[in-house]
Every structure is written in C-alpha cells, then in structure tokens.
Image 1: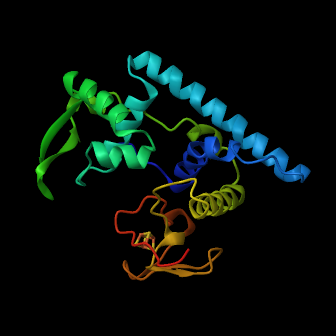
Image 2: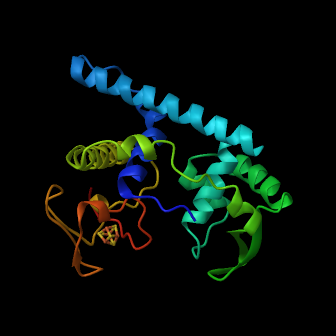
Amino acid sequence: MIQRDPATSAGSLCVQYLSAMSRKPHSEDPLNAHLARLLERIGEVSRAMRWEEATGSGLSPLQLRILGFVADHAGQSVGVARLAEELQVTPPTVSDSVKLLVDRGLLARKSDPHDGRSHALRLTVAGRKQLPATEPFAAAIAELPLSERETLLLALMRLLETLLANGDVQVQRMCWTCAHYQGDRHGKHHCELLGKELALAELRTDCAEHEARMTL
Ligand code: SF4
C-alpha cells in the first residue's frame, strides 16, 4: 500500500480540483491570476505523468486511481457508488473500469460486511503490483525546505476547504471540516476524538473517522 505523507496528499488534492478552478473567471489580481495559472500548469504536469504511468501499465488513469483508492481505504466498504462519488466520475464509467479490473484479476469482489446485499472491492496481489511506487510530485516536494512545505500544506488545505464550501468538491474528510477538530488552523491543532495534539504533518485530508461539522 502506498504510504502518502500529508504534504504529498495535499499536492495531489490540489491537482484533483484544478478542473473545478478553471471554470471560475480569471481574477483581476495579478498574483491570484498567476497562482491560478501555476496550479493549472501543475495539474497538466500531473495528468501527463499519470498518463505515462497508465500507458506503461496498460491501464487507464481512472483505473489506476481506482486501484489507489481501494488500496488507501483497505478495510473500508468501497464499492462502485462510493468510488463514483469520491472520484467524481459517473457510476457507469466507474462500473466499466471496475469490471475490467476484476476481469484482469487486479480487484476482487467480496461480500460487504456492512451491507449484505452489496459487494466491496479489495486489491489482489496482482493489483497491488500495479500501484505506482511514488506520487508524481514526491521527489520535487521533498526538495522544498520544511517551512515551505508546511506553508504549502496549510495553503492547500485552505484552498480545498474553499472549493468544498463552494460546492466544487463533493467529498472531503479533512480536519478543517471535522466536528472533532479544535485549533486555530495555523499552529495549534487538536483532535478530540483521538485525544491528542496533531502535528502539522498529522493533519488529515481523508480521515476515516471524520465527522462533518454542521457548518463550514
Ligand atoms: S477525526 Fe480525523 S478529521 Fe477529525 S479532527 Fe480527528 S484526525 Fe482530523
């Protein structure tokens, strides 16, 4: 299973929502416009890297995303409906990709312990071998000084929160939007559920224990 550090996850999350951003009118502010273009460029690079990866494996980028999602949520109930919601793709499109992955022996269906009428997906040994060894930007991010990585993480989390509030992102389980989060979103972070202070790197953007706050 891929181990993803929070900074890397935040980087890939920003890429995930660039298409939503591109629908917005360009800002008049030169700095904002520059940042938006830069994020868009990074999104293009990420997509190109994913395509290259997919071509090498004989899978589509969506199929690789499905394998990655199932791997990252092992032990949870992951089926077609959840994949469609989380990956923001239509259920028939996900269903076709899942069928191909099952036919190729990369995913297996098993009875969903949470819903006897449904099937959950799990990664097979062959499927695990298809997972990319690293995230597209892992090496580049690692070259940034720690202070810049921390600033980037906070900025991307705020960006993600705004996209969520604007309805551009459908599902996100981040600390910022969690009922259990107590802190100032800058230097002090506490999870009431876990009963501990969270270091910056421990902030989550896809937490299984997340409980949505009533208001964002
Ligand atoms: S339950 Fe998860 S998302 Fe919520 S504050 Fe704790 S670590 Fe963050």
